[in-house]
Length: 329
Image (cartoon, rainbow, N blue to C red; front, side, top):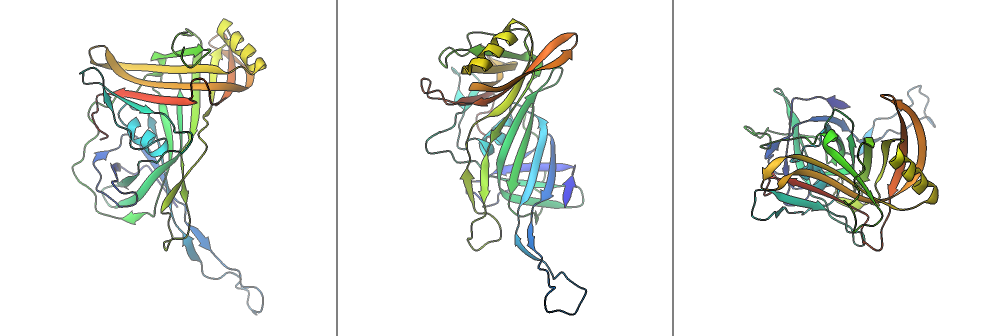
């Protein structure tokens, strides 16, 4: 069963994972909702003088997939990164201004815990909710003349009929990062990140980050009650012009040289010297490199990559978001 393009999506952050709360904000963007129930449907063919071969089904597990697709709004990113990368993150005020910096850097030894949400969805005729919603993966992608976009593969407990939380609004000041305002930096150490901008090179990119698993362990319920941690390596691709920079990156691929990449996208001014910002820092190695063909009269190359741990910088990747939110909405 799938429910596509309902008219209302909203959510609220849970204090205790799996204890439903009322939604606090509407979601800008679209959700595809699909039941992922599992059933036991036995076949009865032996010892029966009948052509009816299939018995009544018994549901043995239930969960719901909620897949978000939409612009990677500076404000809503706090939801998706918290439920998929690292929960419990708080914003840090920037020098007595209205700007707050939110940092998502994975703990690579003990792992991280997600924020969980209760998500409500419906229309003017019906309303449902799912609690313990966490993200199984996130994909960020950018292309010319478009905003950065994000796909979030969310899993929640069973789909339950509920009463809608009324009179909610979108987060104030929603703004999507324009991909064309993204700067690409490629450096040789983590400490030097942000030093070498590669102008007029990046055409588009995408990156996928594993999130958390919903664990179907037995605990007296036919839905999950715990989460599991996955490997945190980012996989993705950079599509670039095959210019001098592209050729240098081809050499790096051939030599299996680690590259330190920053994707930095600035939005509107918040206050003082601080703009809204999405920044992705990674230590990567290229896993493939190929010539794609022509784009607006220019030759393109596509470099697939995977993030790797840098023992000197003691990091593999880090994502920061700067906005004007003092708390998670």
